Amino acid sequence: MKLFANLSGPHRTALMTSAVVVTMGGLAYASVPFYDWFCRVTGFGGITNVAEAGSDVVLDQTITVRFDASLDRDMPWTFKPEVREMELRIGETGLAYYEAHNPLDVPIAGQAAYNVTPYEAGAFFDKIECFCFTEQVLQPGETVMMPVSFFVDPAIVDDREGKHVHTITLSYTFYQIDLPEDVVQAALAPSTLTTASQDAIELN
Image (cartoon, rainbow, N blue to C red; front, top):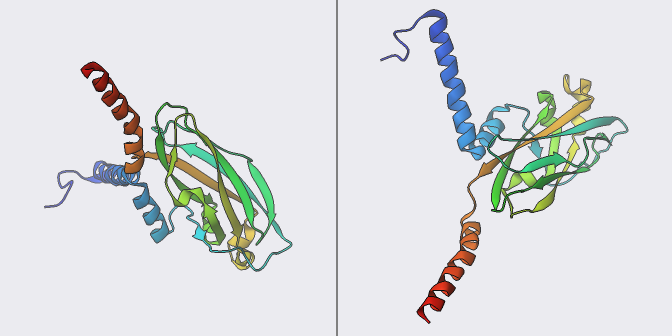
């Protein structure tokens, strides 16, 4: 049996397109790791490379890297880059920081999804270390500075499309995720002790 068999023309096309968008959106919302895997496999959204060390070659030619930050609508943190842009020599290792703050009175865990634009620059943007590689947990009222170290591969100057790129934008979006079990247990411990103390007082 074919889906949307009773529909035809523009109505069928519109409904099928909406179904695909809703499905992919739901998967991305439900699982940031799945979204990250999808981007890495398909190259969707300007996904970047990961390097173990900096480049051995540093050119005199420079490139501008801009930094962008956003939050999923359900993420209560505040999140912003320390600086909005920096100019680096191609191949030079850069170090940038993003500031995150949890204004609530409970711990909140987050995971960052990321990309670069223009998309063709993703293949030449190499991260050495990044807060986006692991989940982040902020305690109530906590503010942290999260580093990302990176370089732009000198091979970009020889690429047919990459050689025309003079500015790269690195963007992060933080999503709220479930707290790790150890954090949940630690958060529950004080209330458990308090309850036990109250029971002891009542017995006495």
